[in-house]
Image 1 (cartoon, one colour):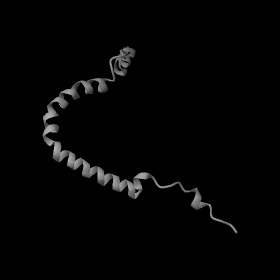
Image 2 (tube, helix red, strand yellow):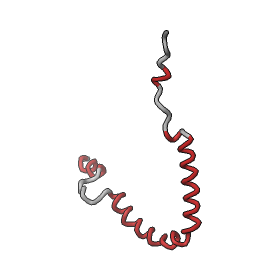
Image 3 (cartoon, helix red, strand yellow):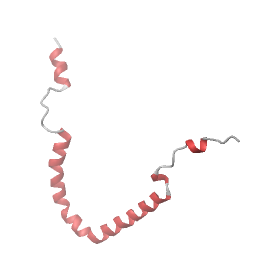
Length: 82
């Protein structure tokens, strides 16, 4: 008797396509709603400080630090021109 091996070769479905993931997302949305409803004043009160904190964080992450002091590609290409 020959069995089809295609059923065993398939990988299991991902977690995010299961009904457990849907339930987890719904519970997370309900928890987020209650968190927002109960702590709205605290979160909005901290907003100016979070904006001020975002400035140095963006500076560090967008400049990727100040350790690299190599010329940019535009400066290299201009130096090679006659």
